[in-house]
Amino acid sequence: MDKVRLIDIKKTILSDNYDLAAEIRQELRQNGVFMLNIMASPGAGKTSLIIETLRRMKEKYHFAVIEGDIESQVDAEKVAKEGVSAVQLRTGGSCHLDAPMIKEALKKIDLSATDVILIENIGNLVCPADFDLGQTRKAMVLSVPEGDDKALKYPLMFSVSDLLVVSKTDYLEYSDFNYEALKERSEKLNPQLKIIKTSAKTGEGLEDFCLWLQEEIEAARN
Amino acid sequence: MEVSHIHELAITESLLKIVLKHAEDNNAEKVVSVQLQVGEMRDITEEWMQRYFDYLSKGTMAEGAKIMIRTIPVTFRCEGCAHIFSADIRKGDPVCPLCSGRRGQVTGGNEFLIVSIGVI
Image (cartoon, rainbow over all chains, first blue to last red; front, side, top):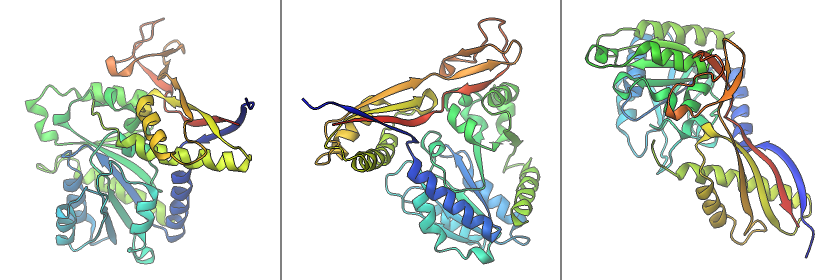
């Protein structure tokens, strides 16, 4: 019997995706474009956040949206209604977006005429956390009806995000959602995580989100 | 907890590519094992990874290789006493076993590494 040799690799499992993501990040930096990867469960309010943001900021900056929602044109249509160009990815049964998909989508976006790209990732709190898309920042949206225990159930997502948007805060008064508990859990997983509370219904926090975005866009430009 | 194993499929595709590349670069005839280090936060099921690996590696030199995952627990450093402890975060808020402190920071559990491969 032949002798088994052990070959050292010590490489991250998703190194191919990571290398391509690094390439994308470099391309965005050269063009001064800010790209936000928005991740959440289905129905948490990713599309609403995007639409409300476009309404408030599209006069000031050139936006593009990459829509990753599975087999659906609905979200891209909503974005197009705001007069912003949307690239709809057809992802089949995939549970996440990856860097090759974003690379393809970017071919349809004129980076030299774009300030900011919003990516609506596939609704899922598990898989998208693993895949670097070359984004400048990662944001996750957690809606109040989903509960304050989600940081315990999906810790990776909380630990990789730069921003946590707590959406549907208009539901707070009807639920036992404990915001302080969520905040404490999130900080344990990720002390740098910034948290913004929003409601697309009452408008709460949307200005805060836009301000955060504006600062990031400006920082990417310089 | 949502149970979807498509997750492991995409990851296994990437894994197999790296495994085959390193096996070829080292003039191996056959890959017999793949050693991984995966943090608990990654939600990887060994059984499904093996199943996808068996399927994807058919006809390659990695066919029949055994996936061996060393799971790295989620660990925290207590803010009060600096003790590092592991905790099953899915069962509830981690509490320091030494000082009962509830504040702290994650120090491990999101590893995602191919450590080595065993080849002939």
